[in-house]
Image (cartoon, rainbow, N blue to C red; front, top):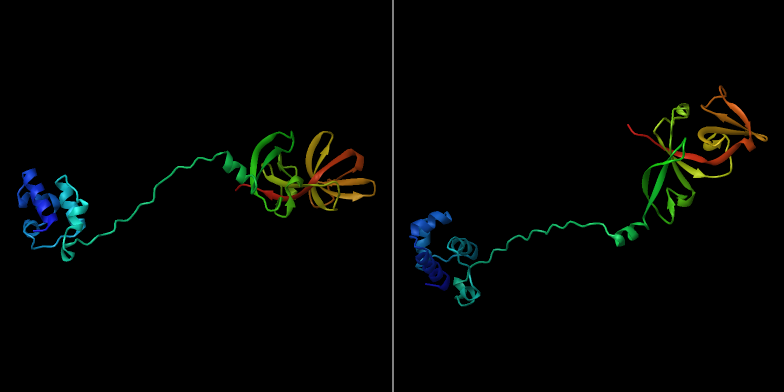
Amino acid sequence: MNRIAEKIQKARWKAGLSEKQLAKKCGLAASYIMQVETGKKIINEATADKILGVLGEEIAMFDVTDMKEEEKPVRVSKPVQAARYTVEPNEQWANALAGVIEKFPIYECRNNQVVGYKELPILGKKVEGFHLDKLLFVKASNNEAEALRIKNGDIVMVLKTKEIQNNSIYLIEVGNQRIIRKLRRESSKVRLFRNHIDAGSELVSLAEIKLIGRCIRVEFSL
């Protein structure tokens, strides 16, 4: 009888169980338990663990090392489960992300109040090829520019500039009110369009408007 077989037998006696009772608890045949205890059946470590676990025992190191080579149980590797961790963002993470993510405030077009934020990846201090210091985000306050494909609630990316490119769409300030219009410069005056045709356009002097930036992107929700 090898050491593991002897240990199983003694543990069974200590627990006051018969071979049949132990076999039933382990889901094994009684004849198998008898063959193990008499040394007629070589048991592997996984099964020995199972039987001894039922009996409240475990395999000690000497049980394996003191056995003859042919009696040593076959070690079955048990899969290791990855530990689960909950990681809370900290100041170091925030500082690291500050180099790759820029958080832009979104301003309501009409009253210039912050109504939200937009986070965008940056590369070389640029967003989509534009320097991040030159970008502004506004939320359309109405449908005045609907004909220009900008509707109430749309988020518009604005590139800050003081130059007018004819027939481009701009965010401007007129009489302390911010509006979105298509512009066309005509000598010392500027024509403001709510659409892509001349109908309903308005001609004002260049001094009457404050140019904030050119609209380059529009984002809308479905």
